[in-house]
Image (cartoon, rainbow, N blue to C red; front, side, top):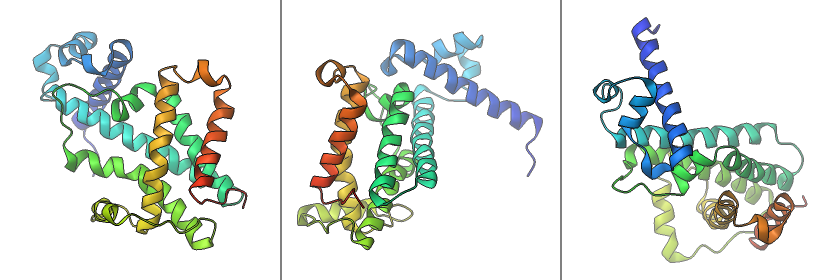
Length: 229
């Protein structure tokens, strides 16, 4: 169905509101996001803005979903063009994860960093978008497991049930072992990225690019990945 002129204008306004909101978060932090301030920056009244987003939480949710999807799109693009053996392709996606975080610090901190007081993300809207990133890592790890490039992990019995919830309808299709490894590796990956985003890593390690690559290679090798093949 062809979009009407009104639909096009509304879609453009929705995107402009989100762009202004990102600018506001970059300047003042995610916790200070205000619909009134966004409206003022756009030359609109607050009631006019409410026709697009009924409240701050609705805008925050839209920004979160956009950020999760943008990160996943970036990882999928990196995966599509990655060449070489399993280890090289896997590390290319890990490097892309870091690259997106550093290029989009406001979005990354919105989805993984600073909490917004009083905001509770609606799971039905945010979880499908959020799960895409783990799915990409899990699919790569499943490929490595199938090819014998990743050792079969022993998944703790107490963790299996929760991992199964992540494999709900329309979510992860990779085996439990691959999903387990993606979660275990994802946590230290985020720890390093948050230290770097807040400039705590740089004075300690100096060469952050080399340190990140070395640390990730060490981590995933310890987890049973053969990154040389």
